[in-house]
Length: 165
Image 1 (cartoon, rainbow, N blue to C red):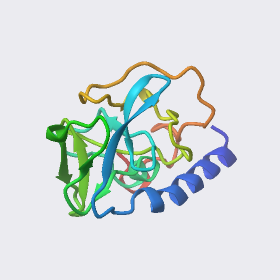
Image 2: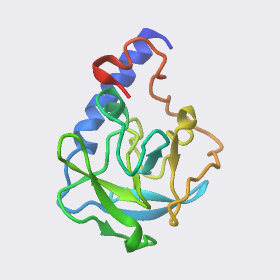
Image 3: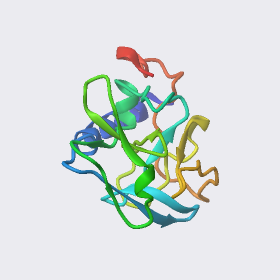
């Protein structure tokens, strides 16, 4: 990856992180119809992703990982929107004490580089980031076209600075 592209991506991710990682009083999750079918989305219509490295309902995405993939945070019980099964919606406590929204036990994240609702630019990234359907199952179908560049790979120098994944 070219250094300028990396700097641009990191700057965009950091700018988006402040808005995306803000704690909502009661985060809302809903199902949004996309080119790969119905997937979980936040109240802004942005796709929510699960991270394959998360274990036992706990997030493993911190520091530079969380800059590119901000967790969906809430201050209270999350709200179930259209198509969401309330029984599958929950929270998990992060290392900093903040509550991250979960669905079917999967901590949820947004992709900071996705600036428009309904996008799937993070879908299948590194084989670790997947949208979820209304049952909480991983959606593996890929969108036909992705125009937003993905975040830097975990093998890029400097990506894991500060603890990374």
